[in-house]
Image 1 (tube, rainbow, N blue to C red):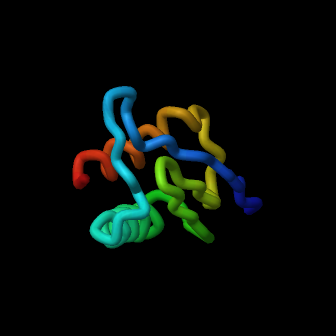
Image 2 (tube, rainbow, N blue to C red):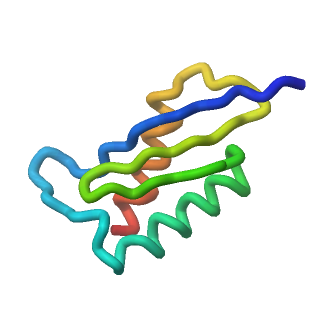
Length: 82
């Protein structure tokens, strides 16, 4: 079965927030969420955390019907832990 590959940008700061994602305390939280995501929902190949957003490369065995909804779940998990 062919895999579906995705390259997405996650903007994690809401309009009123000025969080810096390159803060050393944030990295373990992001890593934990992405490892959980990789175990349960997709295969994560790489991620890059920038000061105010992140890039994520992942694949799934089944194609996504709604990429925005799927990525929104990841963003909510990260924001909830931050």
